[in-house]
Length: 294
Image 1 (tube, helix red, strand yellow):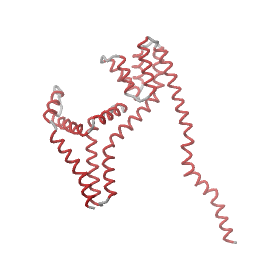
Image 2: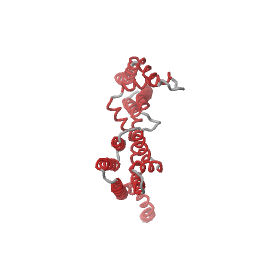
Image 3: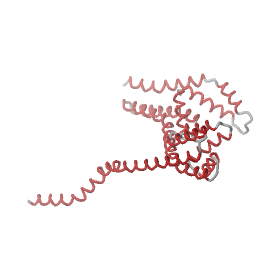
Image 4: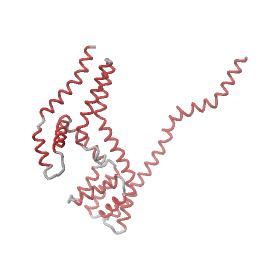
């Protein structure tokens, strides 16, 4: 039992000691100077709170590996970089949540010492640490699914606009103005990149990099090739719209084919037993009464 107590105490003391060391060794003057340079000329800014936030981010950034930060940044790009979940906020929130989970696990262990509660405390700590990742990843998956659904209709709108005489960028602007979903947001961001002077090819490739939808990547690749070799944009849009509609119909058919298999197990576990009880129940009761009378 003493070994379990020492192990639980070490799992709490060592992370707290490392966090305290990181706080004490962080270069707060450099962070304050950088923030002062960046925030110069901005009125109504609370410098003290901003410096504190920058210091927390610097400490949390030290505790997080670079590869892991890059992965979170990629998930945020797929999620559309929501304003409520910036990268700095996630990097600061993850160690804080893990610390809360460790404290809860220690409180549970102190009330009921045992191997099970040590495992439960570690599980709670890991769960709290990865909760922001799960939220960002889930948001990104749902957003990419929405883009995949909206892409054929957006391509049709752009095709109609181009055939009506508009240019490709004007057609993108019209589709972005008429849309309300993430596909329209991505088109608006691409147009903003073009307006600030970013090369057309880089802006289109950035649109593909911000998404995991293969149809969108194929569309961007076709547009880049058409712009490079002077191919008519209407032909490219017509072919891409047709291909996108075909793939959407195939995905719908695939889901329809999977539906009977998904329904089979609930049917066997919940519906068939009730039907057997309703149908065979009276017959079984009559048979039992007849055998009892004999």
